[in-house]
Amino acid sequence: MLSQIVLASLAASAASAASIQGTKSSYLANEEDQSAIFPFLAGAAPYFPYPLGENYYKINTSIPETCTLKQVQVMARHGERYPGTSEGNKLIKLYNTKFANLSKTELADNPYFNFLVDPTYQFFLQNNASLELLTTTEDSLTGALNIHAGELTALNFGEAFTKKYKDLIGDTLPVFTSSNSRVYETAKYFSSIINKYLGTTINLQVLNELEKTGGNSLTPSETCDVWDFPVHQDIVDAMDTSYLDNLAFRLNNATEGLNLTSSDANMLFDWCAYEIDVSGYSPICNIFTQEELVLNAFSDDLSSFYSDGPGNPLVKSVGSVFFNSTVSLLKNPPKEYSAYIGFTHDVNIQHMMAAVGLFDTDELMDSKFDYRNTVYKKSWITPMGARVILENYDCGNSSYVRYVVNDAVVPIQDCNEGPGFSCELNDFYKYAEDRLSNITAFGSACNITNLPTYQSFYWDYQNVNYTAPIAVQSY
Ligand SMILES: *[C@@H]1O[C@H](CO)[C@@H](O)[C@H](O)[C@H]1NC(C)=O
Ligand SMILES: *[C@@H]1O[C@H](CO)[C@@H](O)[C@H](O)[C@H]1NC(C)=O
Ligand SMILES: *[C@@H]1O[C@H](CO)[C@@H](O)[C@H](O)[C@H]1NC(C)=O
Ligand SMILES: *[C@@H]1O[C@H](CO)[C@@H](O)[C@H](O)[C@H]1NC(C)=O
Ligand SMILES: *[C@@H]1O[C@H](CO)[C@@H](O)[C@H](O)[C@H]1NC(C)=O
Ligand SMILES: *[C@@H]1O[C@H](CO)[C@@H](O)[C@H](O)[C@H]1NC(C)=O
Ligand SMILES: *[C@@H]1O[C@H](CO)[C@@H](O)[C@H](O)[C@H]1NC(C)=O
Ligand SMILES: *[C@@H]1O[C@H](CO)[C@@H](O)[C@H](O)[C@H]1NC(C)=O
Ligand SMILES: *[C@@H]1O[C@H](CO)[C@@H](O)[C@H](O)[C@H]1NC(C)=O
Ligand SMILES: *[C@@H]1O[C@H](CO)[C@@H](O)[C@H](O)[C@H]1NC(C)=O
Figure 1 (cartoon, rainbow, N blue to C red):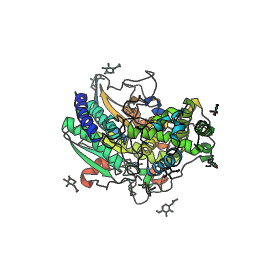
Figure 2: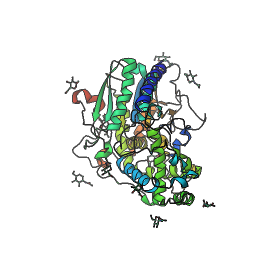
Figure 3: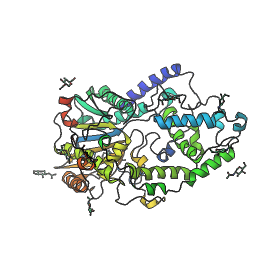
Figure 4: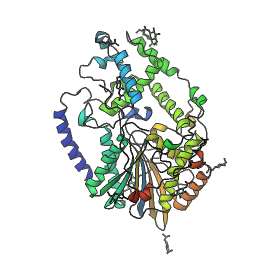
């Protein structure tokens, strides 16, 4: 029933979009589904469910029969967005200097770039006015036909969340968001669905991400001035990047007048990913070989592992702020509500995961692609619209928790024998205590002296009222 309401409202907005956007590009309207390559686009492509593999260990995400939901905790990334200021301006420059003036006659037979001569094709960044922002059906080149707009991902998440967790949502619900515009907009779209179906009054609390607020934040890394960033740069730098040289050579060789450098070639993956976020489809995605896509993903996994992932010990300290809250919310939940929801950025979710350890084998990643040590797939954890959910349910006389990462149950190592591959609550407390005992506390690791070291907003928002100003630039 929920779906029908959403579909009806989408159809209505599609109809109005068609008239408003009659002059926008029609090139992209009927193109094929490109979701198979999303896992290779370094977290810049649209949302996709965590790909454990077709039916392989695909654990049922329904709450097991005979169990009753008790609490849910959510950390979510904003939906699909435009590129950031730096990468966006570079992409515009690349397009204008190296592609816009290629000879149309030459391009007609070009195996890679013939889309550039299609009169209905428009490069997705006509200017830099929207950089950093969430993509919406209103500003997409294809209007409501862009099924990958960040707005729709947020609405769909709101719908799925409402369906599954409605019993935990009362008459009023605080929803927490960092103060970045795209994050805030995502939280608003998500919240509007809960309000629409359940009549819940949403109390949006905005936490400042541009000011140093210590641990009482959805972006605690902002306050960590001793950021040792990144560690093991030598391992990251040692990765063989000849796939980029080969890509540039292959494209230049096929295209009269084109003179891409290897770093230009690297930017084409961003062109591909963000063009899908903005327009719903990107013809440049078709130029890559499978090997290039795999190495692009691996390169990002490797650098992320050492900058914002479990390869950087300081990251675990920063992420322990979230993990500590997870445990506090279970042990000492605020009485007035049972759904704890925070919207923030991809790196903050990565920090939390590094502390929790769902994707940490304790082994360092090697600069050489090693299939046996690729547990840490950053873009599978935090694509656009990522959501990491902790479910707490009671079965019989016991309580259990489990993590659902992007629509897939990801069991905790050595603690997953409960119903639905969950971890018995006291065993989870033990797991958390063991893991946190090995992690230097946030306050000491980040030299926090005069600021809070933990999140109090879930408990004190009614007395404090978090009302940070919304900002386009992120921290
Ligand atoms: C998943 O679990 C639910 C609840 O137990 C059940 O109704 C559903 O059939 C299950 N789905 C699959 C594919 O097994
Ligand atoms: C491309 O062509 C336009 C119009 O012909 C011209 O104004 C512009 O300077 C050219 N740009 C480059 C980088 O050659
Ligand atoms: C947009 O591009 C112009 C011209 O390159 C530049 O001066 C300006 O700073 C850019 N603005 C943003 C928001 O990136
Ligand atoms: C370079 O282009 C030539 C002529 O189009 C072609 O025969 C050759 O295979 C290309 N080389 C590579 C490495 O793509
Ligand atoms: C291609 O670019 C490189 C460096 O960007 C430059 O040295 C070279 O002369 C250029 N080649 C052509 C044919 O424009
Ligand atoms: C964990 O959070 C609780 C309150 O939620 C706080 O009392 C405690 O000091 C925190 N632990 C650390 C190490 O910050
Ligand atoms: C739950 O606890 C009650 C009383 O302690 C006991 O009688 C009952 O058998 C228990 N049920 C289960 C499913 O363990
Ligand atoms: C904590 O560190 C010790 C020593 O490095 C290690 O043996 C142990 O497995 C670690 N425990 C956890 C929970 O990571
Ligand atoms: C820690 O903070 C104090 C006071 O804010 C400062 O004096 C000191 O230099 C800092 N230490 C490090 C290692 O950054
Ligand atoms: C917080 O906001 C609520 C709703 O606007 C208001 O009723 C309450 O008085 C505020 N509390 C404080 C301490 O400002």
